[in-house]
Length: 497
Image (cartoon, rainbow, N blue to C red; front, side):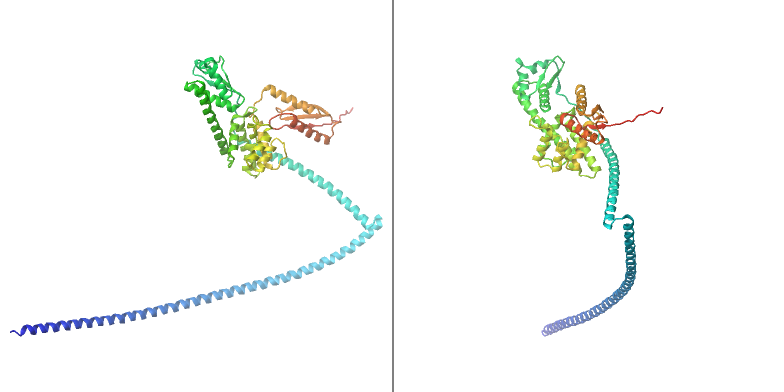
């Protein structure tokens, strides 16, 4: 009984060893089977890859063959086309050679006939070849000169008619597109008061308040019997506006004494200056002009407080800029330069009180100083014909200025000034010899001069109109432009009895 456990243990150990051996052997078999399957799969993949490679090569060869065949067919077609064209060119060359030969034969025949004609002409006219040639050239020159003069006259007349028609069309179109209101400022501003008691406070004790106000603002304060109203008077509209604002604020505040007056006047001055700069920027924005120098913008804004013949200068300049831009667009010119020159054409008028010189000279000076374009400077300089026009832009600016200033409602004149200007206009035109009568018509926009026909011929009439126009420019101040018409008429009268 004691030996059985040892035998059983030995049997179990042997069985375990046999199991391990079988397991190891099975794993080796599985590994070899897997390796064999992998080698078979790789061989199959290599076979499939080789078959695909062969199919691609065959397809590429087929495409190459097809492309080569197509190229051969195209080359054959082009070669046949070239051969056909070469045959056509050869035929044309032969035809041209035949024509050249025919022309040569004709030239020889004509040369022979010309020699015969010359000989006959010399016999008939008794002129040599050179003399006949000179006579013929002279006649041809006379005929050509006469025809050229007639043609030039017709072209000039046609150009005048078409130019006048197109100019009227463009100006009318520009005017129709502008609808600006025109206001007339005076030299006084009225300030409303809450009551007549405020007049005493404005005057102050022994007049110290009103004296301090006039000294701080540079205006005259007129206090009369007009109820609830005080009038501020000054020829400088900027100072008048500063005084009006300051007085309104003093009245609203109620504290009126010299110290407060000076403080409020300084604040009103700063506000008006800021408003001037804003008005210049707004004008440039409304007209579509960019890149103006800040100082030029301030000068443009100051035109808000200036008038010319009752017309506000800023509104006038903006209107001229719009008109000039429309005309330039119609004529395919530079719209920006036209608007720029138009907006700045009267900028010198805000400097005439502080500097010497005409508004044209001052305008040219500031435009040059702040680097404006030469065309813009010429537009400023030539809008009253002080200098020659160097570009169509300056002519457009001048025309737009005349349109803005001369159309109804734009400007206002006193009746006495109006009559005086018409009288001076007729007197200036009547001072020339040969003038019989002078009539100023169309509100002074046109002067008609009737001359004696025996003293003034047609050529002298054209010269006289120019002389009258230049004299009017030198000696008479007027808005816009004046048309001078010289009329010369000769009448032959007889009676049949």
